[in-house]
Image (cartoon, rainbow, N blue to C red; front, side, top):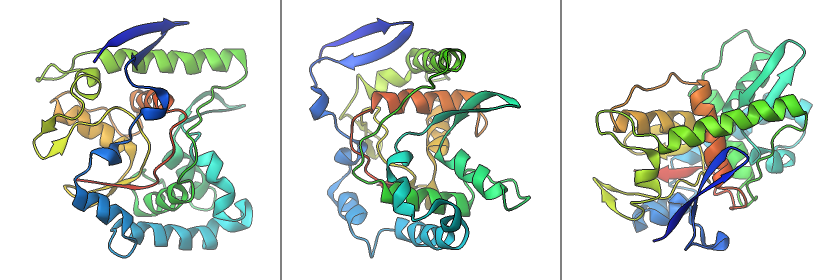
Length: 254
């Protein structure tokens, strides 16, 4: 499979030249049949528990301000976003970060991205956005766009850099080993089209933040703390790679 490295305005993008834009595949495509069936079975899918709770929380705490949850379907697929205000130079927030910010407006509690309430709302919003095309846009202000671009470039560098005791880079697995069996999993390409995930090895739902940290752990590298700029930059880069693909909603994994 032929691959080439393209540099555009300082941004490094890996393109698989033999795969057309319309033929890119989500991680769900690489699941065994039993997990595919489980993901489509609303009665048996464990994520339905988080989805139901998320809709209940939305109606109780969010609907008065934001209206029906379906009104945010197109917004869900635009995260992570560059958020700034008069007291901040700006930073990337993903969907779970934004949910935590919103919940904190009516509570003094500090919300973790892996807290049950945040994951429940994220699952419900993600399910509502199913089928929407992923669309990632940088900020319009020049200084903010430059800072956003720096995060993209940082993540692109991380993506191609060997790390950990296994001395592996993201690209070596998710561009060069697609479809190969790795323990009980089949390696899928680095397209992010469906989170949160219920991972059977976790026995619970988890955010993309947790999944990225699991990758660091898998190659025996130093794991960044949850919510770190490094993880948000990587999520931005992976979502940008996935731009134009349909969102799968919350997903099942081994």
